[in-house]
Amino acid sequence: MPYDAIIIGAGPAGMMAAIRAAEKNRSILLIERNNTLGKKLLISGKGRCNLTNACDTEDFLGKFSQSRNFLRNSFAKFFNTDLMSFFEDAGVRLKTERGERVFPVSDRSGDILNVLKSKLKNKNIEVLTGVRVREILIKNKKIEGVLTYSGKLFTAPRVAVTTGGLSYPRTGSTGDGYKIILKLGHAVIPAKPALSPILIKESFMKDWKGISLKNVRLTLFAGGKKIDERFGEMLFTHVGLSGPVILDMSAAVYDALKLKATTEISINFKPALDRKKLDARLLREFRTNSGKAIKNIFKNLLPQGIIERFLEYCKIDANKSANQVTAEERKRLIKGLFDLRLTVSGVMPVEDGIVTRGGVDTKEINPKTMESRLVKGLFFAGEVIDIDAKTGGYNMQAAFSTGWVCGDNI
Ligand SMILES: Cc1cc2nc3c(=O)[nH]c(=O)nc-3n(C[C@H](O)[C@H](O)[C@H](O)COP(=O)(O)OP(=O)(O)OC[C@H]3O[C@@H](n4cnc5c(N)ncnc54)[C@H](O)[C@@H]3O)c2cc1C
Image (tube, rainbow, N blue to C red; front, side, top):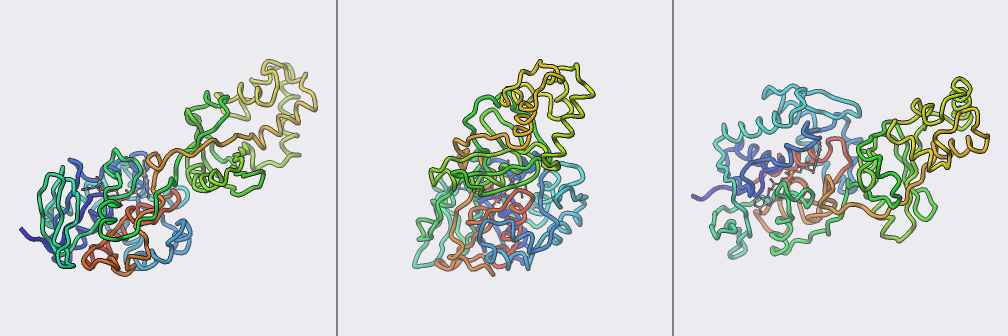
């Protein structure tokens, strides 16, 4: 059966494109290689789905690494308030958390996916799961349809590639879209990690795995020069560091490592205090608890799990009582609390990142329609395009917005 359009990949971008296209009375075939839809959406936001961010357009665009102007059109047509209404009108209550991050009140990404699935159903969109597209066929400069890995041909004059990027390949995004469109003459900006955990050389913090720190300031140094600084939440992993601030910093870390500069991250555990205030705080703690072991006093200053190794790093005997701590040792403790230096040995590969930097070159896509500038009838949406942003709901919104515009025009 010929369709008006075929959409390859049922993530947020593909599902939204199909829904919008059906609203415009297009007959759509949505093809997904997994047996279920929206696998990545389901694990997003640790299973809670941070679907968008409630900040204004300029702030929003500022969170993207590049391609800001490219997204302006999509956001003008379908932005955060439209997306929120889309789900709220369908009965999902939403809440806005710290940093303007929007989640379903239920904290269940499944509620977001269910709305998309029921809209696909209600609009009679044909959905094929467990079918992997191999190629887009072109005959006499016109799109003929798609060919699957099992050799089946589905015909349609228009096709949208919404296959995602390269991160978390187990969710289905293995870079198929890049291979498909390279054959059609499109340029693909090579993928590199963005929002990826960072590997650390020092082994002493391996015991800190699973511990998260709130309200810390992290500074990135390359060759001794400060190149980035951020404030927020981080997490120790078995090989290094992760958590929102680290993920947001990871692209800068990747670039610094490429320059072969010694790359270090400094953790400031007490960014709200200056040296004088911290010294006074330590003196107060030490005086009130003069007979206590320093490791016990530090329970008021650092998470329990990191105290012993931290004191080792500062070269202080953890069992020493507070009244024996010298002024010199106090200086070392202050230095450690303000500037614990870790040497970066790498960034986890793109597959372990939350989002892919790189993809279809935006210069080759019409931002008003999401149609290819090279092949008539070929459309794109979502992470397959070279767009990526920080954590906070921006990437999902970009997928939904470009998906909506793609569906509006396909
Ligand atoms: C762990 C994790 C947590 C995240 N949390 C958030 C968050 O809270 N907020 C946020 O804004 N962003 C988050 N992101 C990023 C966000 O999930 C993605 O940017 C978004 O899912 C991209 O949507 P998409 O539709 O473009 O691609 P995808 O969601 O990757 O969907 C692409 C679909 O295409 C299918 N496909 C691929 N190739 C083929 C083929 N050949 N044939 C048929 N089907 C194919 C795939 O199976 C997949 O289902 C997170 C990402 C990860 C990995």
